[in-house]
Image 1 (tube, each protein chain N blue to C red):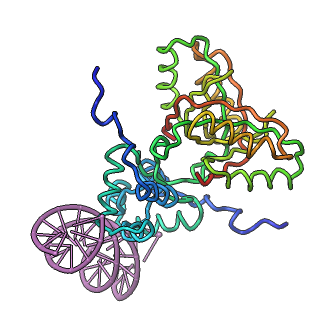
Image 2 (cartoon, each protein chain N blue to C red):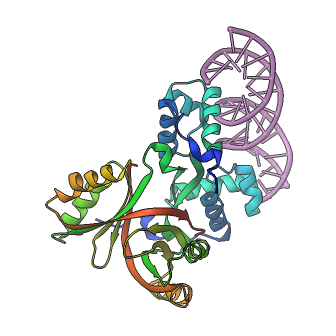
Length: 159
Length: 159
DNA sequence: ATTGAAATGGAGGGATT
DNA sequence: AATCCCTCCATTTCAAT
């Protein structure tokens, strides 16, 4: 298929103002347009146009609340490394599509190296986590091996 | 030290409405309050009170824009596993405090198992990633060993 | 604790410089 | 792009239940 126009140079035109907007909205996704405009040093209407353009071109994928996992009754978090049995594209893509729909999955990382995937998951208890791995991964014929690392604590970085 | 009052029963009082609010705001952090109220089946003013309470009690930690890493000129992502030389509380806490302030760090996971930390980082290029690891981790006397896994793709789960 | 009504303030659009 | 309109609607407060 031919290249879509949006795919050619989506981010080439980003200037310092755009990057400042992205940084501010990453830190506070509910920052009002007026306050955002003042922080990045442009007029509110300009800021609104910029922000809309950033959403439309895909630079801003969405806005999400950061929720304390414990509030959802899922106080445990873990990183589960997954090695697949086969590494054909179809098998790899299919596993990703399946894993993102599993309950409790926060993020799915397809990685290079000894492991193929790292799943960031939440669970209600250590028993629930064990059952989750057994029921969703161990029974999957595409999965050769898993290793679960409990997360003691997670912190957000600056970048 | 004694238990702080906030730690005793912070989330015991969460009911179905609260959980519905958390789910909706996780999916769309900019959902207007009146639309949110309609979805969860309460009056807008009630919904606002609930949402404010959820922020105040820490169930909602914040709101953030999800930005395409490529838009920031950091198209590469990696998971960097870190093993520390010492595991005394002071050393572990100090490393976490330092690592969250490093440029390009998205998340810091303190994990159980063979590794102590997993850092989710962004970089401009493979050379920049290599330099980042060398400059910030390899020179750190608290760091015994690191292993970097490039992220081919990341997908968000359903929760 | 929840609600509906009333005031405050921001979002969004358009025309002009 | 910025500024000054303008209208509309969401947010927020408050009295009442």
